[in-house]
Image (cartoon, rainbow, N blue to C red):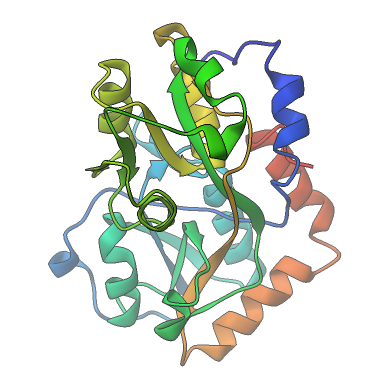
Length: 269
């Protein structure tokens, strides 16, 4: 695990990001090309689609898939009496794989949006999150008033096909947008001063700030936008959707789920 962020910043972070709420998430396997996925479903196996590039929600460490969503996936599979199978995919292939019945459920830090709901069904939210920014510590004073003070000469980094990209496109139309395929490349560009900030999901940004504290990076300690994270299933799979919603609202699960959230996201309220 990365070093902990500067202790002085945590109280501010806890206060400003108290909107990161609870209620569940998890999972992932070794990268597979969409064409190599098994088409046939097995009644005894829960195929969980994940993109393992979103710490602390879902990622790989020493070849093992870990994170909040990974633990949630294991608990959910046990809850419905199935064997868990992680299917690792690139982010952009998650929804297509679900629609083609290559996987049963997406548990990968996905935001519930109206456009996505046209094609797929979402469970109740498991985390109230939002977008925030990773910046260089030396530039922190430039963004002291948050969203309204954001100006940039080098551009804002985003991840392709994410709500972060959509947010920047719609809220900062006059600002240069630089698209990356993964967070690691965006972080390198920020350190190298090729971009002025990187906007992405708050839990991921805070993890990256912790991981790159010694590289001079920190987080913009305010949510720029709020959104709900949820799991996704096919619209015709009402049985799995109902089971997932019951799992999330089952009072017998609540304390266990809250402890998992606190472990992976200590500032969550």
